[in-house]
Length: 366
Image (cartoon, rainbow, N blue to C red; front, side):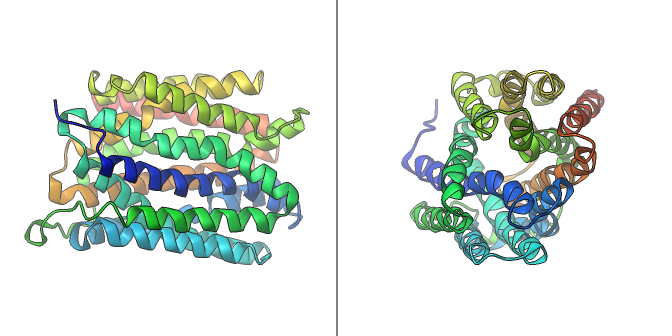
């Protein structure tokens, strides 16, 4: 069996950990920055939270093409630098329109970073251990989501600029680490010029549903915790991220043993169950939701990359992650409208989105 845990794999994961810890800080800080110093509504918080996905969505296919043509490392480093700039400028105290513009800049950076990250991971991972590689590699993302919000809470209690500058520093560190990974892409004569990888569209729609549902939780869990009188508003986010991390380690080999679409449908059903539970018990719902998320991303990305040749991986990553942007950006924005009724209603609506995604995946599988 080919070796998975190589130095390059470890560096790649470490760079993502640094980047997504910065993202985790913003997950906590953005809603409270908008509803606090900017005196915005919950709907405005949802808009600001998801605005970065608009530019990211538009640029994912372009990033995919550039990743196949120029290589992975230029977009990796450039994405980290762009995110650092966005967070650093946010520390200057923008008003709501300026914050939205900086979130759009963050989306440009995130498109480059994320597409290059997944393409590089598939380059490095043994083909018969791709699901396991996705599970372990995603620890960087979910450790960032687990520890970033509590770090953001501590820093924001001092000042919001301190939180934004810490996020910028973490992005700079990510760019430095990724420079040592080296180039993993195909040779120039093999590189694809495709913008869209069509076989990725079906699994991408299912991935969109999973991410929209979980994105609604990320956007409104801290506000819901505050409404219910929970002393530590970041606790549900920490519990969610920590559960995904532990489950991804314990069940790392499962995605390689089950058909990806069957696993994806089951994951969406569990996500729905967790979200329907959150109005009753926010912490218990966080754990159940996290168990579903544990398998959703490895399942759907495995389905996507099973259809892509090495020189198409950037396009496949760009296409699939565009659906990721629709979910993580559109989900909080639309659910933010429901949140004007109540945050518990928004979380229940997110559960309905997961149910629809499960039905789509079952149809796609057949």
